Image 1 (cartoon, rainbow, N blue to C red):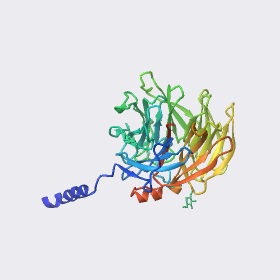
Image 2 (spheres, rainbow, N blue to C red):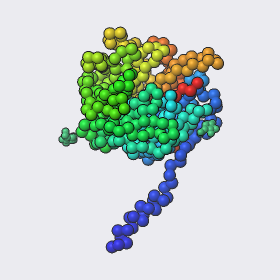
Image 3 (spheres, protein in one colour):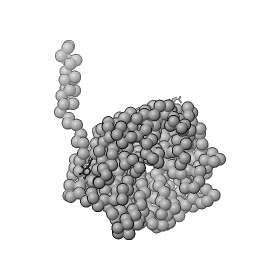
Image 4 (tube, helix red, strand yellow):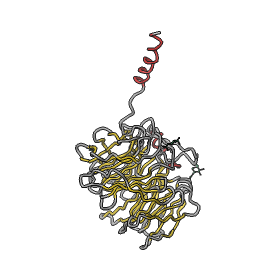
Length: 411
Ligand SMILES: *[C@@H]1O[C@H](CO)[C@@H](O)[C@H](O)[C@H]1NC(C)=O
Ligand SMILES: *[C@@H]1O[C@H](CO)[C@@H](O)[C@H](O)[C@H]1NC(C)=O
Ligand SMILES: *[C@@H]1O[C@H](CO)[C@@H](O)[C@H](O)[C@H]1NC(C)=O
């Protein structure tokens, strides 16, 4: 009897001893790495694999093209939300902002939705694609963390959790200590959810600071924004205010010079929230199915709404009176684009100035770069394969788990 009950324990220990720890980093440029000294920046996304989450980096070359560089272990695990609607397997976290960059403090942070932690990496001063862990992953203050807000000077970070224990929590950042929890910042969204959550409806999508950093705002795919006031010591108001609008408000961007937020909305197209009047107007994108991500380009002055369902980016103009029109639509074939970031390269040596959209082409297991140099002028510039380099490096990677996109420009 004794032997029988102990046997599974021994077998368990043996299998733990036999499975080696994931490698700390693997190179994705076995055919020869691009010149780190020449790179003007880097782009980052994550594998979000339940067996071990890796941050993947690619250098941004002086002409704006990407070159896969390496994958670094986050010491956390990824996760995938539950989708009873079976719309598709992409968009594991139902969020935008699962990777955050502070250019001011030169760090990159990512969520580990499977281990309920946040990992922070320092960006190497000579090679922006080379990341090194700062400390160990820290608890996200809830379950299934999915999105970050980082303040302008880069000494404060807030995260939103979308699981059974959902809500927000905030941290201070210091290069030496990494993240330290800030007191009185764990606040619930009171969502009736499980871990992992069932979505995309009834889950949080993105967390942002207001431009004056006096409010913390979370979009919830139940037709509202949750807004907390931030006190001078960084603590949050006990309860949040609700601004209702839209169907499934997803990614959040402030409209420049306005107290207004434009949100992508897979239920309709996009919404514009007027934060002065606490009202919202929804704008349809004809033929859209899953318009979940968005970016703004200073060069064109327009917003770009990313639809994974029909592989289309819709360029949108917001008028002075907070009206809006569709400028142009760009079809990206089989990309299945999700998280996307914008970066501008201003190379004084070569007088090369250009703005780019870096898009995680999840369905194609790759990255797509588009140049953006004026309204209605987005063009596909480069397509990069990720599955080949990952296979060559033995890096576990699955299109349905991939998530996040953030860029850092250092020159
Ligand atoms: C930064 O990158 C350079 C070039 O790859 C390398 O020589 C150096 O050791 C790195 N520094 C740190 C702190 O990792
Ligand atoms: C929470 O959701 C579950 C599953 O849908 C449901 O059975 C339960 O009644 C809900 N609880 C509340 C308090 O709404
Ligand atoms: C995903 O790629 C497959 C081909 O690999 C294609 O049939 C499908 O239409 C693509 N889906 C999207 C949303 O692009």
